[in-house]
Length: 127
Image (cartoon, rainbow, N blue to C red; front, top):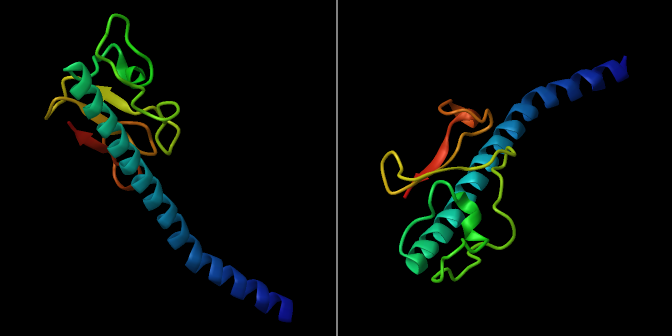
């Protein structure tokens, strides 16, 4: 009987604590995505200062690491290591020109699709 009471108490604790824990995990992934986007934005802006333009759509973010052919003013690499994936394992979406600025840099969230709410909501910056 005592064991049954302990199991019920543990079950109640898990039912109360687990949702808060998983909510915090989702929030931390969104924060990590926002921080990575900020670092990528700074690298893109440094590239623009050196080269005189934003990276082209066809070059993508890889030009932050590798000198584009024929680009003498490139002074990179502008990132340490590889171009990161978002916290959900998807590549960041880079678009030039952007919908509301010079460029868009977006993570589509957990579901990897535009739009959504909560953890599925987009995280992004307009350049």
